[in-house]
Image 1 (spheres, rainbow, N blue to C red):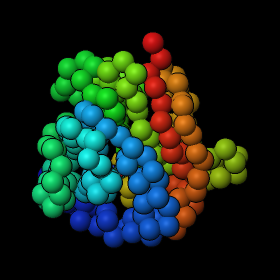
Image 2 (tube, rainbow, N blue to C red):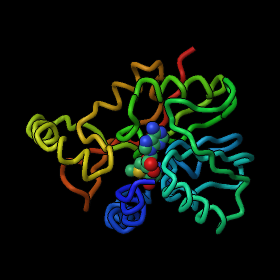
Image 3 (cartoon, rainbow, N blue to C red):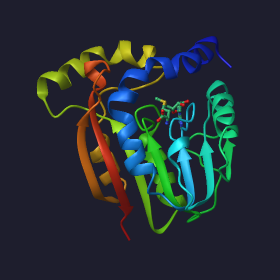
Length: 208
Ligand SMILES: C[S@@+](CC[C@H](N)C(=O)[O-])C[C@H]1O[C@@H](n2cnc3c(N)ncnc32)[C@H](O)[C@@H]1O
């Protein structure tokens, strides 16, 4: 476990408290509150989505590859009565059978995975037919000026944010991975650094 990894995990909730209150909480409740059946969440972090899972969830598997985060996640889950377990694995290599989940939840994770197309291919593989990907992600701006700032500051941000890329066209990557987006809201992550404000929230279905 790296020192920066432990510090990042310890500081994460405090660092995100402003955007969480202002914007993220509402999206989490609206999206995560509707999932049901067998659910996989990738990159669960400290467990920010945990309070929003409802009674319709029959199985919840939350993956998290970073040990310091995984321990915090386990502590958060212990405070709730969900049928949940934590699995230490990256989204690019999910240790689950094909078609084994009804929903996959990814919130603020696709910016951080090492290989987004591989992670999305894995998400697609483990989703059952008609299963849905639930996403809440900060993305590359449609505004050219802001996108240029995202490119300029990317090198610094990726270090500060422990591998977080601030300039990725995530919606296009979701579609390129063979998903059809069924719900989409563009928003701004208020009270966060401007380069990570452009936000997308929605659901996508794997194309047959
Ligand atoms: C910005 S945090 C988001 C945490 C949480 N999902 C949330 O909504 O607050 C990104 C998380 O992705 C995890 N992560 C990093 N690389 C990953 C990978 N390859 N696969 C899955 N998760 C990863 C990090 O450890 C971290 O917990």
